[in-house]
Length: 244
Length: 301
Image 1 (cartoon, chains in turn cyan, orange):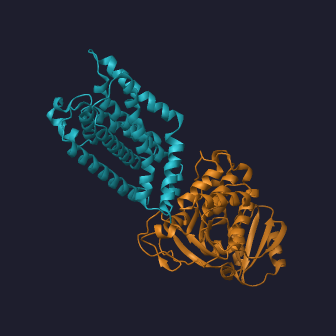
Image 2 (cartoon, one colour; image 1 turned 90 degrees about the vertical axis):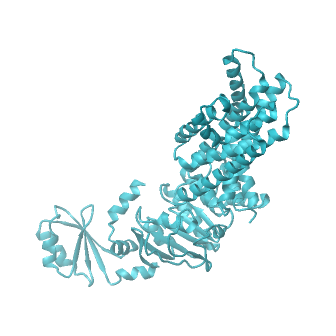
Image 3 (cartoon, rainbow over the protein chains, first blue to last red; image 1 turned 30 degrees about the horizontal axis):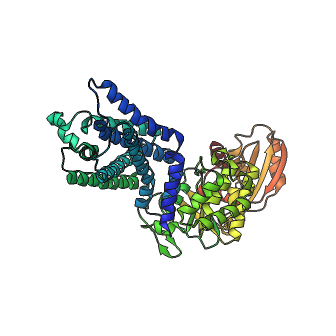
């Protein structure tokens, strides 16, 4: 059995059916522009686009991946087409990897839209691109697996949206994007350090502006650990909840 | 589920008959890997795959009770995608998809999105998707429920064609006539238990020697059963619908005393019909489930 054929076709179908649809492409374009404008408008002093870049990249990935994956999987479960995938002779791990690969790819593409915009507005010299790429990929993976965690926890599409927002907004304020980690109240710091995005944003800050706080290897290791844990827990839940 | 023990011979159509909620779909889910088996074993071609159903899924085709293909994909894309899930190469997928669309009379609808298909067309394409990889055993869960008579007939013909080509078919239904017409062997399932299993002929043995005559009467006969039993202790009387009473006996009937009995009670006899026991009679006798209840369930669906 050539499992790679199943893997590739699930990925291609999801890209065509969900991620490369015009509304999603426009979301990928509008979202970073809106975030950048918001920062420009709310700041009393001139803002350097390069300072905004780590945050806009991270948020573009987080918002793009979590909602898309949670919604598409919940939708397929509701229409029972997901059963067709569970009945295919491919392992559950490979099946869930193929379902999440589309969202990961979508997240990575989303990350480069603000970079392209920024390249027209400011200089991007001195950026450590391999580090940017590594963190973008790992942020996309952890955010996607968070989406998977949400999808496994809900049964309705609207619940997926509501539940993902209950995750995303606290993450937004506690991962060092709006409020630097050094300015966070002490009691919130432990929460901040259990959020994968904290490490992703910090790597991006180091790679783009050289002002991160956490050691880069530690951040990469933490993101990888979050990815494995979230994926393993989601698979455990799929086995427990969807295969009765 | 408890005490579910049966075997299916290679190449046969095996029917699983029972009312809604009896456990038909649950059994399919356990056999195909959508539900966990807590105890017992499931063997396919002699190999136990109770704990690793993934190994056996390549040999299975599954057609669920509700069409579950992708609404946004067209017929051609849906078949191709389903073939890919079984690791089929692109050329082979395309060849099989063309062949199946032709065989199932869906060529003209091949490029229409699945959501634009009628219910019968959806069911046909779902069956085509279930056999694109040429499975050794095909699970059909209520294949004709909720579709019109013409499509149901076409689907029954397709099932017979697949059987003639050597596919083993596990068919669940609550249509007794369908089971009787299509299946070589049957199991009756009620409340998660198999209560009888055998060929249609073997199951019919249950009613062998039983004679039934149905009388269509006028007037109110709702309270004659006690009176009837005291006059004819060797006969059993059952009240049916549409002014019909059904008389069961192990010996042959003498009709005249029966007609006289009814007429003496101002119950004119409009019709007397001798009934050949059917699988329906066997099912009612074995399961104790009234036909009326089964028919109501059909309406519910």
